[in-house]
Length: 273
Image 1 (spheres, rainbow, N blue to C red):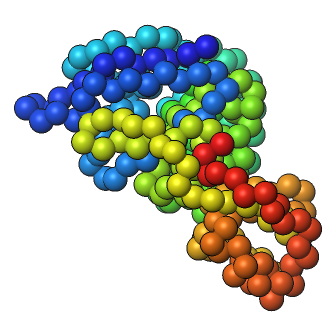
Image 2 (image 1 turned 45 degrees about the horizontal axis):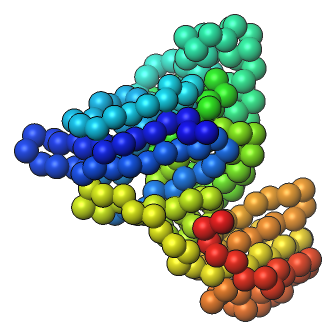
Image 3 (image 1 turned 135 degrees about the vertical axis):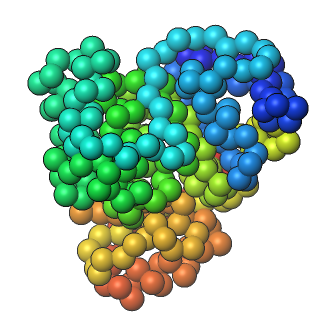
């Protein structure tokens, strides 16, 4: 079932066309990745999906409960992260106690530097992004819309965000996100698109990947290594989704760093599942 559907959507900024006849139906339980360069119209498309901007033409149907994180989260406010989220939670229909509990839970999971009492205006870009993610997740959205969500996050928070996207879609909600990296879009999304010249096209798999499970060893920022498309932390293990072309070099580095290789999934699969 489509929770949000765009049909023939266009958008113009003055005389300049940004979107040209975009069709997109977002279904329950799927994660849709949209690839595009800067200026391609990704943010415009996501604002329309999130309901914060109207198209110039075409139709948008579906009214899901939506959580939205823009590409730049506005954090120059005096209130603390907890107070800000509590306020938004109450606007969304939560009690003060429940809003505070959910705020603390999400800020703890994303490991906000300084804790929930930190004033928003004192946060770095990465930590402001964590608050932005928390506010989008606060009211348990049916549609989660994320614009370049990994941008500015530290390695641990990037891993947590990837886990959260999988959890949200597994629970039956829909997720739409943008990124400029083909390997990330393919690794996380269940369906991938490219936005170019204002038009959306479905992508076939472009990156062959495998799974590597590691345990122990030195602390390594695996997400930053070439060819690593996703990292999931499961208890004491790191599960890596790795481009097949980089598999041997990653395994060699893991062994050199003292890691135990628990599994290597030899079944090559496409990056878009």
